[in-house]
Image (cartoon, rainbow, N blue to C red; front, side, top):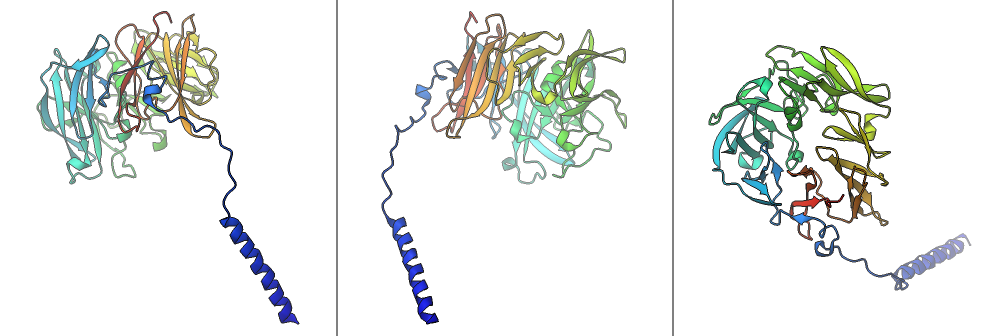
Length: 428
């Protein structure tokens, strides 16, 4: 009797499995669908009609230290120089020369071929190294070098500045972790800052935040011989917490400003300017005659702000503040959710806001807002894919501060990117 019951149960189970199997094999019910979404094309893009493509062939133009002079670089170390005039780029007429340099970094010799020009008495040059060029080089798989005229406080001559972070390749503003004294034509270069007691990172290289210079910091140094360092902080705070130090051959360089926020620093007739944490907020501080004075006070955490040059924007309110004067402006009635990048022109009258967004289906998209910070309050907003490349900066072009250059894909496949320029309307 028991065996009959078991057999009956097994039969019922088998029938259930069969029904489930045939149910899954059955043709699906017809689905009611809407109109297929349009395939995005650069030709039909509203943003394409509002920008001018300057890098049709994939050129990404980056500024040099000479106004109106730009360069392009590739990872196979092809360097070219261009001048900007009349809204267009043209190959520069300077004679390009090449020189070999050997960087001693972390006791490793990194060879780089530098292309350079004499731009009216100013030597301008760049070079790129990747591991594809020399398999014998250990520890470093990438290096970008720049010939830079020394800040006045460092005396006459040039530096060779090196950045080993490949993520910064197309950034206009870089952080250089190796600083060398350089003379045109010399193959070997010497470290400009004492390497005593320098610590090792997990990668086996010297700590990249032991000595730091940025393009902006050099421009703002005036007659001071200072550099940045995060050596006394944990490596995850690199460039977030820094000390301003005085260049010397001392075992422990003198700290001029301790535990500042980020890398913003300005030296002018009024003193030294930098940011320091204050309770839950922070202050713009001015130091003169070894005394610190709070110049501009911010109640919110610095995490709620983005900085561009001498300005910060509050990501919650859209208030733009001049760090030197405390003057404020409003970015207008803009939804600030997802604000991730902020760039402003030198006089603080025009700004660009870049947002990270997703559409209703969850697909990442982009939003860019061009806004005038004057009484007009004019804004122009674009929301569509493929407007700006990750890992690139916005660059304000010479003139009245109304034209700003960015990098975007120039093919529908997205396999090539080039520089484009947006120009604010004259009445904005």
